[in-house]
Length: 123
Image (cartoon, rainbow, N blue to C red):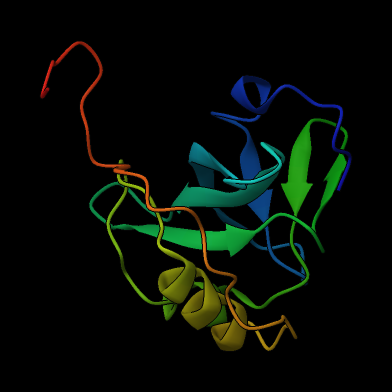
Protein backbone atom coordinates (compact mmCIF):
# COMPACT_ATOMS: atom_id res chain seq x y z
CA UNK A 1 0.00 0.00 0.00
CA UNK A 2 1.08 3.60 -0.46
CA UNK A 3 3.10 4.63 2.56
CA UNK A 4 2.99 8.38 1.96
CA UNK A 5 -0.68 8.62 2.98
CA UNK A 6 -1.41 10.26 6.32
CA UNK A 7 -2.93 7.44 8.42
CA UNK A 8 -5.55 9.85 9.79
CA UNK A 9 -6.90 10.19 6.24
CA UNK A 10 -7.68 6.47 6.15
CA UNK A 11 -10.08 6.56 9.09
CA UNK A 12 -13.70 6.39 7.98
CA UNK A 13 -12.93 4.98 4.53
CA UNK A 14 -14.93 2.03 3.27
CA UNK A 15 -13.21 -1.36 2.95
CA UNK A 16 -13.94 -4.07 0.36
CA UNK A 17 -12.79 -7.68 0.25
CA UNK A 18 -11.18 -9.51 -2.69
CA UNK A 19 -14.61 -10.10 -4.27
CA UNK A 20 -15.70 -6.46 -4.03
CA UNK A 21 -17.99 -7.09 -1.06
CA UNK A 22 -18.12 -4.25 1.47
CA UNK A 23 -16.63 -5.33 4.79
CA UNK A 24 -17.03 -2.13 6.77
CA UNK A 25 -15.16 1.09 7.55
CA UNK A 26 -11.75 1.82 9.00
CA UNK A 27 -11.95 2.71 12.69
CA UNK A 28 -8.26 2.94 13.56
CA UNK A 29 -4.82 2.64 11.97
CA UNK A 30 -1.94 0.99 13.79
CA UNK A 31 1.65 2.02 13.05
CA UNK A 32 4.77 -0.14 13.12
CA UNK A 33 6.64 0.52 16.39
CA UNK A 34 10.04 0.76 14.74
CA UNK A 35 9.25 2.62 11.50
CA UNK A 36 6.01 4.51 12.18
CA UNK A 37 4.62 3.17 8.88
CA UNK A 38 0.90 2.24 8.85
CA UNK A 39 0.74 -1.54 9.30
CA UNK A 40 -2.78 -2.57 10.40
CA UNK A 41 -6.29 -1.27 9.91
CA UNK A 42 -9.01 -1.97 12.48
CA UNK A 43 -12.19 -2.40 10.43
CA UNK A 44 -15.64 -1.98 11.95
CA UNK A 45 -17.45 -4.89 10.34
CA UNK A 46 -20.99 -3.84 11.22
CA UNK A 47 -23.14 -1.68 13.46
CA UNK A 48 -22.93 -4.03 16.47
CA UNK A 49 -19.88 -6.01 15.38
CA UNK A 50 -16.33 -5.87 16.62
CA UNK A 51 -13.35 -4.43 14.81
CA UNK A 52 -11.20 -6.85 12.81
CA UNK A 53 -7.51 -6.23 12.15
CA UNK A 54 -6.39 -6.36 8.51
CA UNK A 55 -2.79 -5.94 7.30
CA UNK A 56 -2.30 -2.88 5.11
CA UNK A 57 0.74 -4.13 3.20
CA UNK A 58 -1.02 -6.31 0.61
CA UNK A 59 -3.99 -3.93 0.45
CA UNK A 60 -4.65 -1.22 -2.11
CA UNK A 61 -6.19 2.22 -1.86
CA UNK A 62 -8.37 2.81 -4.95
CA UNK A 63 -10.71 5.71 -5.57
CA UNK A 64 -10.89 6.55 -1.87
CA UNK A 65 -11.65 3.00 -0.69
CA UNK A 66 -9.41 0.27 0.70
CA UNK A 67 -9.40 -3.06 -1.15
CA UNK A 68 -7.96 -6.01 0.74
CA UNK A 69 -6.94 -9.32 -0.90
CA UNK A 70 -8.82 -11.47 1.62
CA UNK A 71 -12.32 -12.95 1.86
CA UNK A 72 -14.83 -11.31 4.18
CA UNK A 73 -15.19 -14.56 6.19
CA UNK A 74 -11.44 -14.72 6.87
CA UNK A 75 -11.45 -11.13 8.08
CA UNK A 76 -14.42 -11.69 10.38
CA UNK A 77 -12.64 -14.75 11.86
CA UNK A 78 -9.42 -12.83 12.64
CA UNK A 79 -8.19 -12.96 16.25
CA UNK A 80 -9.89 -10.31 18.38
CA UNK A 81 -7.44 -8.25 20.41
CA UNK A 82 -9.71 -5.26 20.98
CA UNK A 83 -8.97 -1.80 19.66
CA UNK A 84 -7.41 1.22 21.26
CA UNK A 85 -4.47 -0.73 22.68
CA UNK A 86 -0.99 -1.51 21.46
CA UNK A 87 -0.59 -4.75 19.48
CA UNK A 88 2.23 -6.86 20.88
CA UNK A 89 4.70 -8.56 18.50
CA UNK A 90 3.10 -11.90 19.44
CA UNK A 91 -0.38 -10.63 18.55
CA UNK A 92 0.92 -9.29 15.23
CA UNK A 93 2.48 -12.68 14.50
CA UNK A 94 -0.86 -14.38 15.21
CA UNK A 95 -2.57 -12.00 12.79
CA UNK A 96 0.05 -12.54 10.07
CA UNK A 97 -0.36 -16.32 10.44
CA UNK A 98 -4.15 -15.97 10.31
CA UNK A 99 -3.87 -14.19 6.95
CA UNK A 100 -1.31 -16.69 5.66
CA UNK A 101 1.43 -14.08 5.35
CA UNK A 102 5.04 -15.07 5.92
CA UNK A 103 6.90 -12.99 8.46
CA UNK A 104 10.06 -13.38 10.46
CA UNK A 105 9.78 -14.18 14.15
CA UNK A 106 9.00 -11.08 16.20
CA UNK A 107 12.08 -9.09 16.99
CA UNK A 108 12.86 -8.18 20.54
CA UNK A 109 12.10 -4.54 21.19
CA UNK A 110 13.69 -2.44 23.91
CA UNK A 111 11.79 -2.67 27.17
CA UNK A 112 9.27 0.18 26.81
CA UNK A 113 6.05 0.69 28.70
CA UNK A 114 3.53 1.16 25.88
CA UNK A 115 0.68 1.19 28.38
CA UNK A 116 1.27 4.64 29.88
CA UNK A 117 -1.42 7.21 29.32
CA UNK A 118 -0.39 10.59 27.98
CA UNK A 119 -0.35 13.26 30.66
CA UNK A 120 0.24 10.91 33.59
CA UNK A 121 3.43 11.10 35.57
CA UNK A 122 4.53 7.76 36.96
CA UNK A 123 8.03 8.62 38.14
